[in-house]
Amino acid sequence: NVGLDYLKGRKEVATDKIGMLGHSEGGMIAQMVAAERPDISFVVSLAGPGQKITDLMVDQNRAVLLAGGVSKENVEDYLKLYQLLVPVIINAPSDSMARMAATVVFNRWMQNTPKETVTKTTGVSNENEIGKFVNSVTSTLRSPWFSYFLKYNPAPYIKKMKAKTLVLNGDKDIQVLSQPNLDAWRAALAKSGVKKYDIIELKGLNHLFQHCNSCSVVEYGQLEETIAQEALDTIGTWLKANVQ
Image (cartoon, rainbow, N blue to C red; front, side, top):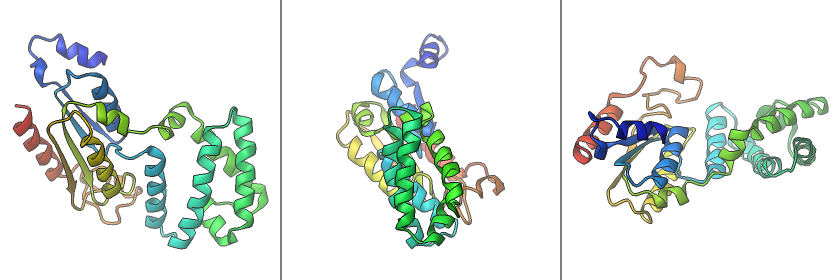
């Protein structure tokens, strides 16, 4: 907000053409600000969330584990644990109670899950390692930002937006899966005050809008390309047509 107000105070800036572009969580921030500020001209969301974050994270965990070579059966078994752990941990009144509740959930899951699945998906190979896993997950999920993030639902913010909007996703994105995310954006924008919006899936691009091979998270830093030319061209063409 401070940055936007600063730009609006600059004489050399066309104040009726100020917008926001955000990638991933930055796209989330853009929709939050745009929901409160009708003076924003446009929003460009690059793999910004349209789904509830809890749903998005289930899809993300599934895709990342599958990309890492974990079998579909093992992944689905792990997701049963994940979907039980998240609400127990983030809604607990204290860190210690979160750890206690998470330990109970983990032990129940471990008793009913093949040992191979437990080890492949959590790294826990014996009872002595349960505490380390639970402490790691609890500290991550209960950090102030991550706790807020997991409770976030984009739809109410998107529905309040009025700015022209471009939503992009790469179809090889395994962190923000394209189809469910774009479907959620489409549903929310249809009920919003946005009169002009475009939703585009870019073929062959990962979460960072790079052309990819394995398209795994590990590969990001191994690719020479920083961002695909077609992603830049799509943004530029859209801005020329809708903002200039």
